[in-house]
Length: 319
Length: 306
Image 1 (cartoon, one colour):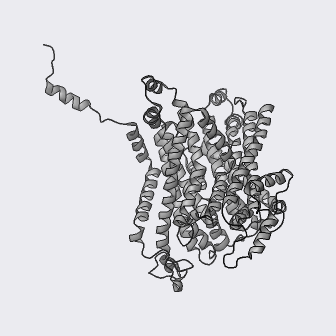
Image 2 (cartoon, chains in turn yellow, green):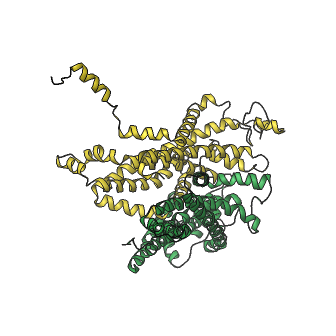
Image 3 (cartoon, helix red, strand yellow):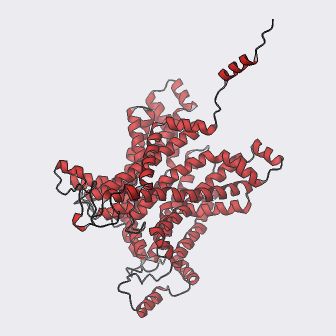
């Protein structure tokens, strides 16, 4: 008698053989979460984001309120080493104007994250659109883009940002959001070009592949092909590039603030805190060391996540 | 090859023109005269008018631009608004210091990063490798002024080994040079390591081992020789990094160079100085990039420059 399986038996075998569907992105996420440095980075960023969002509730003081008699208090742990100028009300001490360091650091990280994410979002949209159009359509869009990048590449990035921000600062736009708007514009104007170039290259490398040809053959419109077929296939390197652009933007803001053309006082940013504190550095190092430490930790966290993303999305290129 | 070099060199001219155009437009399109800086004690209108006329900023912007380019072609960089002296003189005073600082930093970076990268690649996944990777990550991630702050705190304030600001004696020069070298050095360590690892995998290295050459000959003669080619490409980014690093480092350590001059002239809206320093930097970057492309073709015959 031939072995005929009942429906019951078939189902039971089927359920044992069945594997959960795994997508490309699911795999990438798993690889990312296996990377210890990237997970630590994500945790740090998550913590910073929490502090930034709830700074209004968490901060013990108004970050710009001055308390002159309590100038340059040292963090409370220095008391254990014989520090004389501590005050339990100021956990991390105070700056030269008697402003609470802890509150300023919280608000400073808020500015830092905003400066990290907002310009990068702008860069993503502009770079992606221009790069896809140039790569897919070619022609004058492509020519224009390439000539433009040649000129912008001749400037060192930071130099160009400095010039744009320094000049726009003195216009009325310079006062919007304590100077943030101008910084967004400066960072975005200089950096979208690099992403557009990357996207263009990616598009050129896949636009003659069979699945694109096939879509074209069945009559898909260029917009449809670009958004449904090309976009998902070039996303991985773009995500990596964007992930590294975030610490880049944060670093640019800190540098601008440090040389005195960044966020306008009294808004606390980590860069301005370092610049302000530097005046009293040789007597009390804390107003400089603490924001310097915060910014280092943030930048490293973003870099770890960027490295993790690169390895997760493109396993071949792991270094 | 010669045609390629000539074409690249000729392309500098239009690019420089656009750099000048963009910078000039940005500088002059913003409202306000460079002379109404002090809001509490404004200059009399007659004085401002005279200053504007003296420096030629009362003319329409296109006219000013044409005049500027005309003067530039004759080697006249204009007068500094704030110092009243020719910009060429002011830059000339600082350029030696900046060049010295830059060259010292570059040599220092090469001196520690190439050996570090080589060791890291030869002893992949050992403690030595992790230490140098850690250094490379920290050095490329954390901005030079933040590293400078920690170094100033340790060596300047606490241990008092080196003075915190100034320039001229060797003690003054140690910290700015080290800090400026860290960024490019960390980057270079990464590149050296990656390019060594790439070269080790090649067939000709296996062949060299196979024919019984000593490990030293394999590493120096076969791996290193090929691995050093990509390292030449960092001359471009390294020049850019040294220039942008010099803004912050020179300001931080009070080094009288062009970087500090640039930052000061940005603060004071001294357009002629901003224009000239920007053009100088753009020119240096372009020359560095061209050098890289040519050098690459010379060092590696497999790469054909078109």
